[in-house]
Length: 144
Image (cartoon, rainbow, N blue to C red; front, side):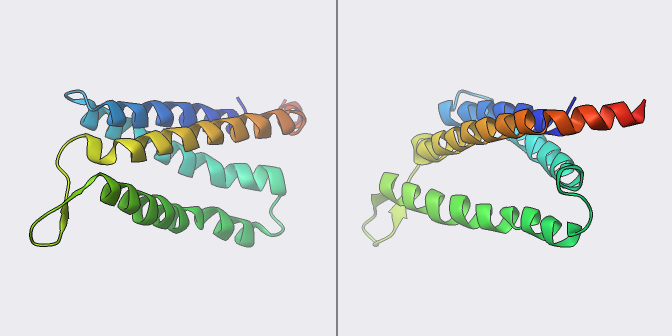
C-alpha cells in the first residue's frame, strides 16, 4: 500500500479524534487524545521515508528539514495563535481583569477547525497518492 494512502488514512482517523474531542462526551478526551497521538506518530513515521521515495536522496537533508519545520510552525499557528484567540473569544472577563473559561465549549471550535484541516490534509494526501501511483507501481515491479 503506498505511503500517501497511509497518510490519508491517518488524516481521516485524526479528524475523527478531533471530532471526539469536540463533542466532549464522557471518556472522549482520553480516546480522542489517544487516536490523535497515534495518528501523529504514523504521519511522522511515514512522511520522511515517503519524501525520499518521491524526491530522491540528492537534496534529502533540505527536504527533511522542510518537512520537520511543520512541527514548530503548526504548533505556533494552531496552539499559540488559533487556540489562544478562540479561547479568549469564549472566555468571560473576571473582576480581576483576567479571562476564564470552564467547560467543553472553551476549545470546541479549535477542535472543529483542526478536524477541518485534517479533512483538507486527507484531500491533499489522496491527491498525492493519485499522483504517485505510477511511481509506487514501478517500485513494486523492481522488488519482484
